[in-house]
Length: 314
Image (cartoon, rainbow, N blue to C red; front, side):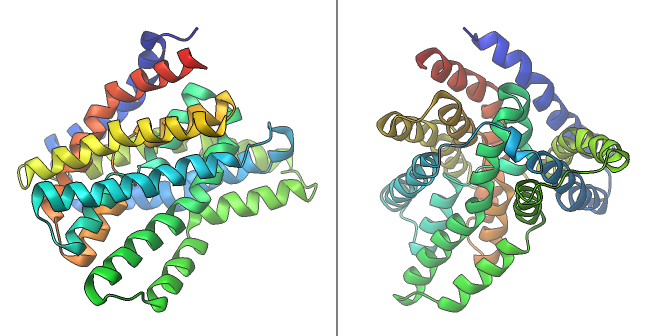
């Protein structure tokens, strides 16, 4: 049986890279442009190459139980509703602020942290499950919060906002790489050996580069503004959501691999997209920025512990 120390030993080097990026940005006082360029390289080149290569071998990987989507996104809907109530009752936030607060409790840093963690701890067999969640993650959650904000502002939904979200998701490099790689492999094609080797080199560099870029990005945020709200968002994200998704996975009788994937992804820190949303709507910017740093720090210990408990119960 996998122990907590085993999972912690696997996770520590990954979070150490996040810390290295954070310290490098803070101590070396690198210009903001450096972290932005590294993030662009990771998000637009390295991770798409890795995902295309892995998904091109989809036919040789274990099949995915699609019920994991109901477990994962069902937990998102439930926790989003709970988050709005907490934001309203405890912090007296308005409808737009409630929506951004609640989004922080469900939007994980799945690309830069969840994907490397799941690959290292659970193996490449977990990649199809992670990829399936990544494809729908931005579409469902961005649509959810956009609809919530529009309803809070106008009492009605804005179709233009939904269409814009759909276009953004379909042109996202990560989603495009997953879909095109899967179609490439299912069509019976394979990457030629002379091309596959350099692509594998790029793919192997994707995870460590993503983690360093994440750390550099976190160094740009502070944690002093709205600390109580930051702590509340972080607690919902790294404790409540993994609990809810685990209960739904048990209710749906998901297989062990899919259960571990959805719980792992639900347990990691708040994604940077929540901060972008807070800036777009000009609410809770400081508190959301703080939650990115705090929740990622907590997840360094809580994610291995939660995953160990799930594995022990499988």
